Length: 187
Image (cartoon, rainbow, N blue to C red; front, side, top):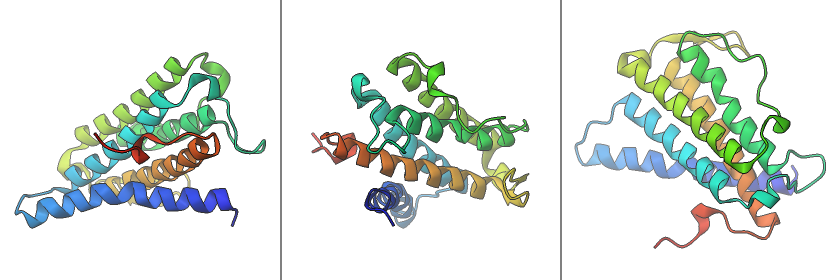
């Protein structure tokens, strides 16, 4: 396995750990954590990290690639955010998107990409909220495997996907000589 991919995978797993521990801590304190709460908190936490990166990374480095064969920083963000519409659209009873992600040339500025990432994550969070607790057990047809899958489980697949790309983007930061927002000392 290539070194960049390995580091990205490790960072992606680490990205998901804090939210799960918060849900576990709430349960220990006797607070009820519903499945919707857990899925939504995890979705929003990973989404927040991607949005922070989108806002933080220098615009003049948005087309940076650690290697010519990889996606640029901007393309990674567009992919991570755009793929969420496979979840969001199905959760809303709509058809999945025709393409996995929008093309980079559709976005002329960092601000446009940041707005798209925010919208994609917000739309997914809204779809979860609209489903409600009972909706977490509804079944959707996965457009990739054609299997029936619970809404909550389908959402977790996209949360994992966002986490994987978060890890990759953290590597982009490091290779570009920058420190990702989550790795900076907290004030």
